[in-house]
Length: 134
Image (cartoon, rainbow, N blue to C red; front, side, top):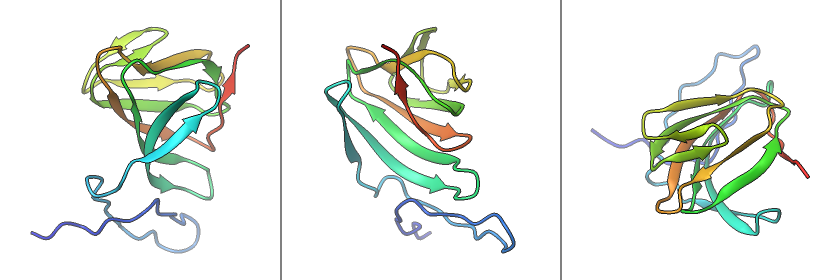
């Protein structure tokens, strides 16, 4: 069986045309380093899908050990499915296989434990923005 070719974040059109099936071999996609000025830390992501009509996004996100995204809100809801490590949130810790949904506008914190990185499948329901709480 041949592996699917790697690609960067495909953009799907869900309007008039029939959507095209695609596959992404996430093992071959490099992690994109994203320095977060508010945290003074680098987070990592692999963009998998963006819907230009709704703004919905799917990506892999990696928080290095000890990095917690401090209290913030989003104008979108988002979910995190834990693939590796433990996700630390304002409501507790969640291990591999856990799916955590954060409602739009909720004040939240999330990131990795001090001892290990966490990798999550990150899904938004519309365009992603982050607003830190002062």
